[in-house]
Length: 182
Image 1: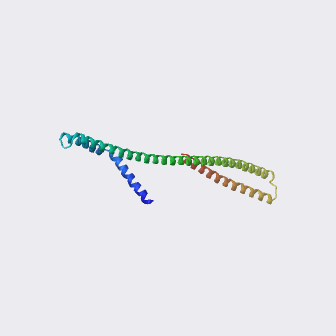
Image 2 (image 1 turned 60 degrees about the horizontal axis):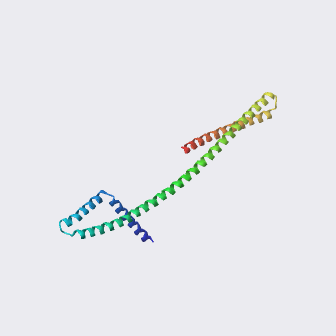
Image 3 (image 1 turned 135 degrees about the vertical axis):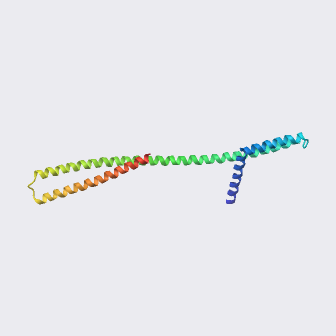
């Protein structure tokens, strides 16, 4: 099986070479010289005109048959390559569409996360305001209540820092998405 494919490849290379040569300037020159020589031979009385025409017609007919075969082989090979390229392009297009859908989904998720973070920030601000009001109203509270409030403030500040870090990550993701869209 391997030998058959190697033989086929060799034949295809030969066919491609002949097809290329036939369409070249050297081929034009060789054919022109051949036809001039063919018509000069009867004029110089080296060969009879009828025999020359018979031989010339036979040679040209055989050449045309083989050239048609070689050219069709090249056309078939080119057609196969074009079909392969079209399949590759279709696959790439599908992959690009999938990536675009993924980017859109990620963008939507990031927008939702951003909205959630904004809501959490608003809630934190409300809690801080409530804590400040409680502190103002109850200056006479015992030491434990003040400690609890301090812990709450600490937790709020910690949450603020975590939210800020999340916002930074979201901004970074959004810029990466913009780069991917480009």
